Image (tube, rainbow, N blue to C red; front, side):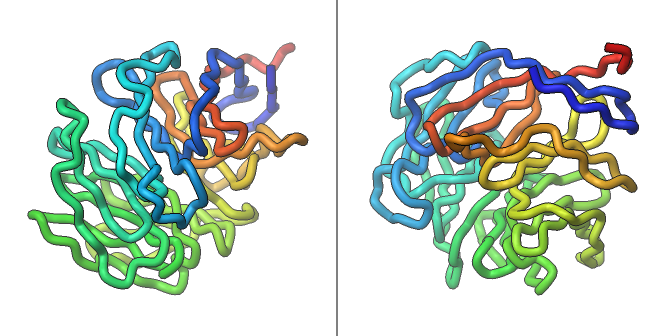
Length: 272
């Protein structure tokens, strides 16, 4: 059990292991599938390798593999995932891929001209956003067309995307920052720093946000305060990529050793 004492919305957020699934191939991202399970992207190679060997897998609520082991195939180093309008979208190096989740089939590919390393994907009000970590850009798919939504030097190494009502929260790997982008003006405001290779971001059930940091650190952050370390990288490495929060569960894909782990995040009173 990993415990961190944090004077914030929680006196003592506690992470307790719930389940772990092994046997995956460089998993990078995981999301809830909306029907009680999870979808995992498997790079199955190098991060920028267009080998056609990438695939998606499905897990049930207890982390058990369900359906075909390689549910959707023919992808190139798939990373970020998002559901929008009943469809599933995945970042695929320089292409945004649309998948029919009922059939488990690719239905469209949206090549993004000049893209270098598409990473996270997020849905907001019918639009699909995708970050390009190599180009300091965020692109948007809307009404079947892809366009550049924002390009800014502050987005160097842009990775995680978390839409909120009035802003988009963004992690920037190069500067180790969490940024806020105003939906209307697209102005970029730094919120916190001090991270290295900031990766995933998700709201935490007890309050604040969970942040992952490549290659293997986990943080808890409350806006207005400094991020607080929960989990440090390990030796041998357990590589930590994007993350998602589903209820009390923090679910993390591990590029190495090819696993997905789930932890229950709760608040203790700090007394013991």
